[in-house]
Amino acid sequence: MREPKIDKVIFGTGLLMIIMISLPILISPEKTTIIFSTALSFITGEFGWLYLWGTVIVFGLLGWLAFGKYGKIKFGSAEDKPEYSFPSYLAMLFTAGIGIGLMYWGPIEWAYNYIAPPFGMDPMSNEAGDWANVYPMFHWGFTAWAIYCLPALPLAYAFHVRKQSSLRISNACRGVIGKHADGIVGKMIDVCFMFGLVGAVGTSLGLGSPLIAEGVAHLFNLERTLMLDIIIVLCWTALFGTSVTLGLNKGIKRLSNVNTYLFLALSLFVVVFGPTVFIISTFTESVGIVLQNFVRMSLYTDSIGQSGFPQDWTIFYWAWWVAYAPFMGVFVAKISKGRTIKQVILAQCIGGTLGCWASFAILGNTSLYFELNQIVPVVDILNESGAPAAIVAVMSSLPLGTLVLIVFLILGFIFLATTIDSSAFALASVASKEIHPDQEPARWHRFFWALVLATVAISLLYGGGLSTLQTLAIITSFPVVFILIIMSVSFLKWLKEDNVNTIHTSKKEKDLNKKVV
Image 1 (cartoon, helix red, strand yellow):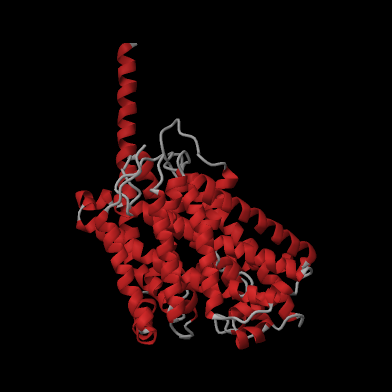
Image 2: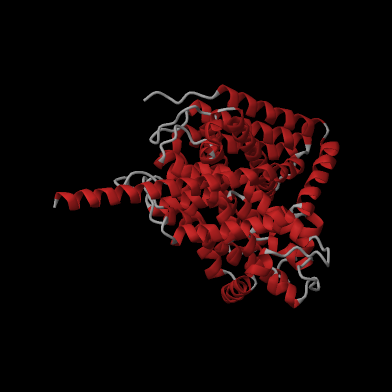
């Protein structure tokens, strides 16, 4: 089978836009940061309600789809079986979806909430301690994974059921925009996705590079320098470049499986040899608070108190997930052949949530325990030296601390490699003309986008503009909100049309059988 050809317009326009945005950040990061920060404040301040209401509606829609009459519809023909075992499928969803972000925020996000809690609580009070790990579980829970899941459904349906020729975002909008999916409108949608994805991956690099560099510097008694950050990115490039070359089955699948086993091993070790009772008790209480206050947290804007907490955290997170969502949709759609709508929704919304909750329960509560019992001054280190230094201090203070830190860094390293690997796959898929369901984008094409992501990261590290690119990821998520709306309407329209046709066909067959009898 011949390799899929690239779409020169989407490929060239996407690459040009990435260069045009990256250069100003590199040349004048301070001025660019001011411009982007102003835009970010406007979006989160004026349209924060849109993200809050939108995520609630998405959560309800997925529940209706999973447990309604469409839940049993399979992505593919009736004879198609899943290409990956369920454990491997979950591992690929989990590692691609969270990247190194979970390893970064898992041990430390509680501290930010403890210092500056929501709902007007007193900082560093008992009440603030009770809520410290509640919001991280909320931000990485059902709602986040619902946002991730939403675009996967129309993309998988378009590709595996409607037999669209490529995994483009525009193809999933075809039910609404029709023939315009093949024109300038469709190409604008695809380029917008590519642009937003590079920004979202840049956010992950901005979190991951300093953390891994801090850990390596601690282990080998080195000084944290820009060169060390660049070496970390180059090593990542080598790893995910190799994985991209190997493809989905040998590359991403193997990395995902290895990382899942390492994650489970590290979690089990911390539970057994860490503050076991505190971890379980605090997690139990946090689950209760999340479930009891889910609606309140989902719609909290603090319009009276004006603390900025929901804008800085909840809306920021929802926008970040939205920026990543189309990429997850492309990747999940590709690996979901043979699975039903219900299976895909539950695998992401429940499987992904439980995995994230385990991380915050184990790593976050251990870190909180160290702070409360004056084992590690986590808050002081955070304020004085930053989050990476605080995370490394917590990991190295566990029993067999050096070994635990090494495993933790390997986990973070592979987590981000699988995310960038999956991102390169998604970018190459969207920039390809036609892809057969059993095909993958050309290897050189996937490797090219892997190199682009690495080059952008190194350039921005050099220019000190990663924080600007993180802000840009949120800004670019705003138009993606409307693309997700179009995809959802298109998907529901297809489901109704195809379901009605199936019912009519079945009735005709029954009537013919009666006449024959």
